[in-house]
Amino acid sequence: MFFRRKKRNAEVTPLPDGMVLETKTMGEKADFGSTVKERTNEQGAAGDRKLGFRVRAALLLSILAGASVFFLYTFTYRPVGVVVAVRDISPGTEITAADVVVKKVSAGDRHPEAYTSATQVIGKRAQETIHKGVQVIAPQVEGNAAGLVKSGQTVLPLKNPVAPALSAGNTVTVVAVMNEGPLVLGQATVISAPPSRPNEDRMVLLAVPSGDAPRMAYAAQSGKAVYLFVQ
Image 1 (spheres, helix red, strand yellow):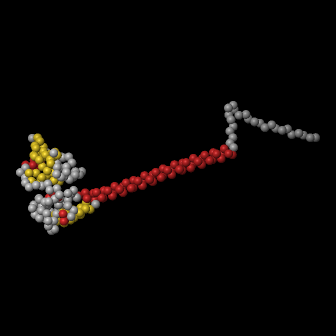
Image 2: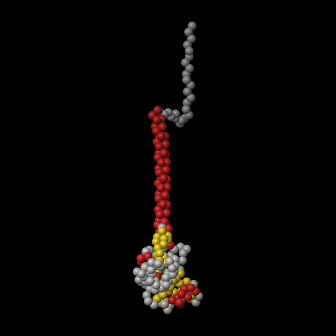
Image 3: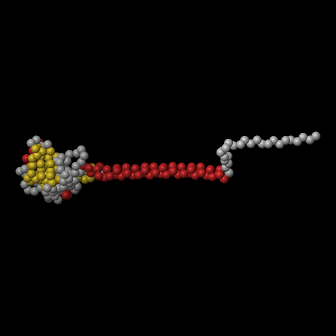
């Protein structure tokens, strides 16, 4: 007796309406892997660019910091030679090699009109008292380039006057502000006007008629302020 085996039909579960079964071929899988690799490479390249930018920025900041230190040293702290009086020198006295010496000071402390070599002043006469330890400047020496102090004039120092930018040789009108109001003191010639510096007193030297010097000096000391108006 022979028995026949019945073939069982495979049961297939139908998909819901609208659902599509997606399959991927080997090629599509390879494309997917390539896409991931490309994205990884792009992210790595972006990271390299950011790192390169940071390195360049740090290098630039280092260069700028070094340049700042160089210029600060060059224009402020760099040692320079200036002529300094080793004793008091009276007006009219001929300056000799025993009266002066060249000393080193920082560039920021050098007076704009200070001499840098003793040979520039030896053999010339002092136009005013040059005190010991003070830098010798052009207006104090007879026959200096400016030659602004004339016969019958006196050098009058003014501390922190209110004035625009001044140059040696400018003619100015001196006005003092007193308790009673402004007082015109007369005219004068600028012989030295160093530039203003923060937190430092500014001393301007004027050549004034000898007869007006006492009145101007008193008004400058007792007044509220002194103004210089350039003619």
